[in-house]
Length: 263
Image (tube, rainbow, N blue to C red):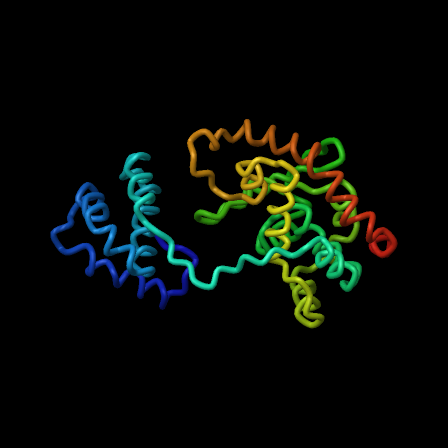
């Protein structure tokens, strides 16, 4: 039932259990009732919310609650977000960062910009590039990632064929750590903002939110949005028809001279 928390922070979260769940709670039906009755008090404490989410994740994994019970409980919990970072870079800012990066690091940065994957998923992609299955489609490559981490997933990575071929050719010279070091040294746009930029671009170009979420590996909340095969087909369609030309014209052709150095 653990998440990606440090041991100290996890202990702090689980210490909330006696506060909201007294010793009379012996089974999962009672847990369900207690969470629903005490949701208002739980929602006043961000740590308590995290504690209950951990318990619900455990119950889901062990199939102790029905889908409806899980939905009911999770809907009653609120997220306490402070200092939310809503910054989305402009095309000009992304292009400026690309122009300032060394050729190999620029190529790694482009992977994030045209796919929307998380930083850790980009590292996983580069570390496992030769073993991951990929499908050649019209103008782009669809890489089967199947990189699942708790509630953060990466099903596929979509890349223009030109970018994919370049990372294959220069695989041994590419490093996410090297990219991060150069970004920090030159004070450029951080990797995490590529993901925000990509999502915003998807919405601007008319890609449905459910498909934009699929590209970025977010778990769909609605039952209708969870039809995995249908979403794959739509994701393929929208990447070809809505995204490919825009991404390649803005981000590859405008840096064509420099990119030749890594080809």
